[in-house]
Image (tube, rainbow, N blue to C red; front, side, top):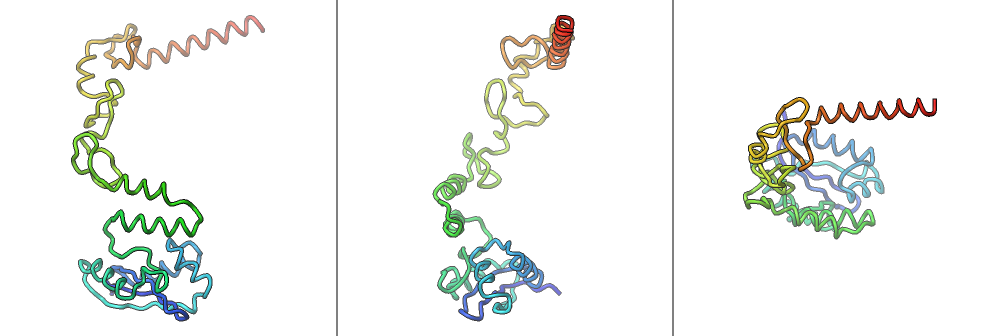
Length: 226
């Protein structure tokens, strides 16, 4: 039976702890064990300690079983209780909880970048810039912090540059389609959407003409040099 709750990975030598949560604790420990053994764990502090002290000096325990709704609250409580987000006492890089937090993300980026010897300023600035999940056009909330525009202003018209809600597979807004609805190709007479004032042919006709011109140039070159 699956166990849902809070677990700890503890170093038996220095008693440092990593606190985590899972709806299936047994499966989560197998994932931790596999990644740490392959030297590809996302927590660099825990990975470095595992490499230094070895697998036999770490123990995995279940602290408390709880409901799925209480996981975030319990994880934050035990991280604060054991002070495992402090590098002197543990290996956690955030204060717990799965909800997106720009403070937690910037703190995590600082630690990971300091380990890798990289500057964290640009990455932290990027997270803070995108943590404001509001559309630039209308101010409505977007799906998540990484989207700059809502669904109504997601696409940009290639003619007028205005943002619109695309219902069909076209890169042109409805206003430009209506405005240019009477323009026809001079060869096949089909309706076209003008991308510039000089456009008089549809894409297919223009492509065929360019192909014919290319073949004619090749023939001239062969006749001249052949």
